[in-house]
Length: 197
Image (tube, rainbow, N blue to C red; front, side, top):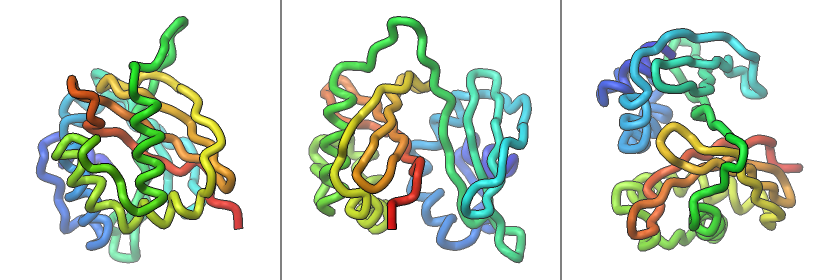
């Protein structure tokens, strides 16, 4: 994990230390993850939190300028095969979401579920990330079913607003940041509960 964090911060992850499929994900997400880890500064500490449902180990990582929650799973050759990333979000008294982030998330979720996101509502760079991840995100959101509620959770280190989204068949944690034109420029996605079977 320390190796991946250093690679993301420098903009040059060591893809040979990642399983091929996960390397593709990391490569596609680099336009979003590189600025995040660069802005976080020096890594101060890593603390083990728990073992995840997929056998991944979860850690709290504390940096000079913020915190993130990450997990990692390894294959038999010691290569990282996957994991999750969730920046630490803070909720201060009276904090409200940035106008438009909830609408942007609802629109993106509907587009992912249908398999046809409105790329015109995304920045070009983020549109490329969403397009590349669609083979994974479309089946996920289609399986989650109807969106029941969206609840603001807090603000992340890059000014993104975080929400819990509850669906008929599960939950996800997502964040959104917008540019001056109201286009979504990035965000994170983390399933909170597996879809019901």
